[in-house]
Image 1: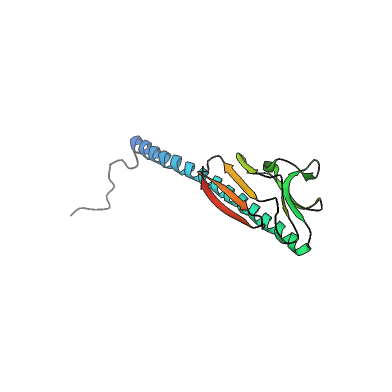
Image 2 (image 1 turned 30 degrees about the vertical axis):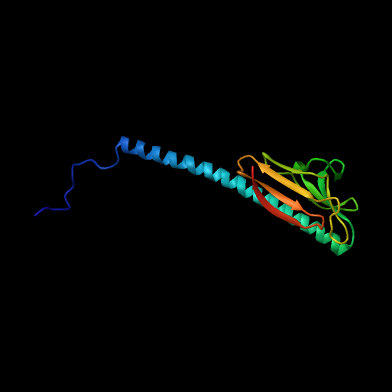
Length: 162
């Protein structure tokens, strides 16, 4: 009969070779995971920013309708406290040149462009002369994100390939 409680003289633990192989495999897995994580962060930031911009366009339109006054969303220049030219530095919702809301700039390594200097909504919520497309691009994004505004002032979010 064999006694199972006897202490064996056989060494226990891992060999250095087993540890090196395990660390190499873990390193490869972490490498791929970190790339995917960075892409996920970039994609999430882009979706968050464009969703916020879409919400702000809808808010500016609703403000114009509710208060029966022209409301403008434009790139904001903090030095002059008025509309500027660079959408990447942030934007503001203005009523009669008075800021209602001000938003800071874009996440790093991203770009926002629009084919107009501003979007103005009249008392009916229409955006005459302001129809166009916001285009958001960012490093690491596989698609551009667009917000299309029609003459009636309605804004729609869509994704398109680069």
